[in-house]
Image 1: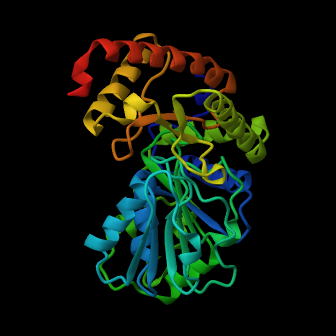
Image 2: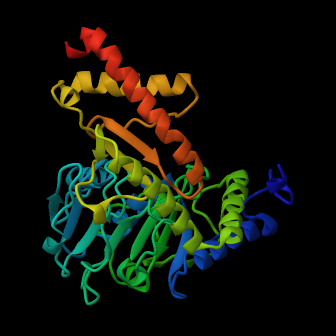
Length: 367
C-alpha cells in the first residue's frame, strides 16, 4: 500500500490539493508520451468509449467522414455514425477479422475515425504513413491498446483516446483525450449540427473549453483512481519511460511469436506481420478437426480449453472476444513480464493436448 502514501482521498476533486494531483497526472502523461507542447490532454468520463464519443460528437460534421473498421470497437463507432450522428456524410471502409482495410482509400479531404490497435482482432495499422501531412480533414484515433506500446506519430493524430486499464494496468472508469491544435481550431470555428450532451461538450459559449484540459474534470473523478493512475505513470517513468514500455510489449509479443512459429495447431489471426498487435495478441486454432466444426462447437472447444487452464490457475480470460472468430487472446502489455508469458506457453500446449483427447472421446462437440 506504499503507493497510497500521500494520497488525498475523500476530498473534493475541485479542492486545491486534489486538483494538483489531477494536474500532475496530466503533465506526467504529456511528458511520458512525448506529446508536442501545443497538444492538450484531459481526463474524461466513460473510459475510452466516452473519450471517442466525446471527440465524435464535438468534432465531426464539418466534412465527410471515413470510418475504418476491422474489429468490434471500430464497428461501434460505425454504429454511432449510422444510428446517432445520422447527418454525417459517412463512408464505411471495412475489412474482415484478421485483415485490415486498404488504407490508400482514405481521403485527406475527409475526417477519419479509426482504431490504431484492434483489441478484439489483434490487427493494428502498421504506421502513420497513410495519413497525409497536408490533410484537410482531422483524424480521430481510438488508441486504447496502443498508448505506451507504440511510438505514435502525433503530428498525424488530431484527437486521440485511451483508458488507463490497458498498457498502464490501471482502472477502467475514466478515459483520456488528447487534442491537437487542428482539433482545437475545429472546435473554435465549427458548431456541430446536433445537440451535444453535457458529458461530451468540449466547448463553452462556442469556444474551446480550456478548463477541461487544466484539471477541471467534467464530472467527479475518483481520487483513488487518480492515485492509481499516478502510481502507474511513476512506474513507467522509473522503468525508463515510453521506450522501455515499447520494449516490454515487443518482448512479450516475440515470446508468443516464437512459440507460434514452432506450433502446428495455432497461428496469428492477423494475416500480415506488420499489422500484428504487440499487446492484444489474437490467435487462431488451425487443426483440421477444429476448422471442420461449426462455430458453436468451436466456441465449446475454446471454452473447455480455457476451463482447463483456469482449473490449474495457469491462465484466465484468454478466449477471444465474442465478436471475433473462436480463438485465443493473450494480453502482452507492458505490465506483463515476458517470463510469465514464457511460463504460460507450455500450459497452452498441455491444454490443447487434453482438449484434443477429450474431444476424441466426446462426440457432443461435433453436434
